[in-house]
Length: 230
Image (cartoon, rainbow, N blue to C red; front, side, top):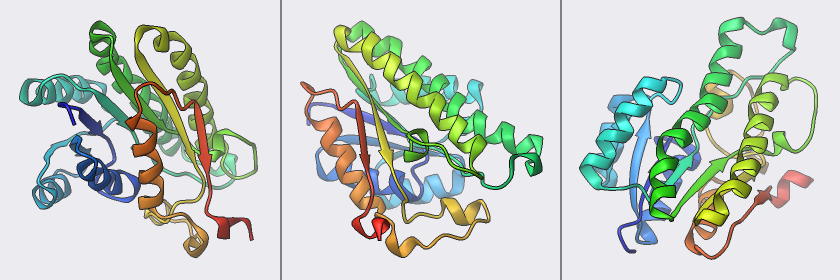
């Protein structure tokens, strides 16, 4: 794969970690990033890839880390905005800090990272941005108001940039997974039956397919495990 360096956020677990493996298998050069520096260091060494500690809620850190990545590895061909946190419950019971954390990570993290990386892609007339959105951005239901808001915002952001950037040779795409067997719910203190969920590897396989053909813009790809319909 011709020097296709892809930065992946939230890559120490779940979809992000599975995607590192799948990108390696497909011949890409993945860059592993996440908030926990110790996990980043350990997993990057285990996978044989470069790793950088990055909290996407920190705009200054985004600027600094992206500059270091490009200094170390050259221009980024791809960016996968995968980092995200879950919040569930009645809106009036949410703490203000929890609301801010979701919006800063899920929404502003994706926007700020894209804003940092996209100019170089446009200047080169080539590149791919893949935003991990959610089926929560395709419908409305109770108990996920802020999480859904964070993802509906990225649905609009992704669609607008798709139309803006495709004529300039850069693809901006959205992947909308349903329930994933990851630790996202557990981290948020929420119980889920993950026996019916798609695996992170299944999600990662679809994402590699979306990235692989530069002649195609996969606009709004959604998927759920068959068992999740039962």
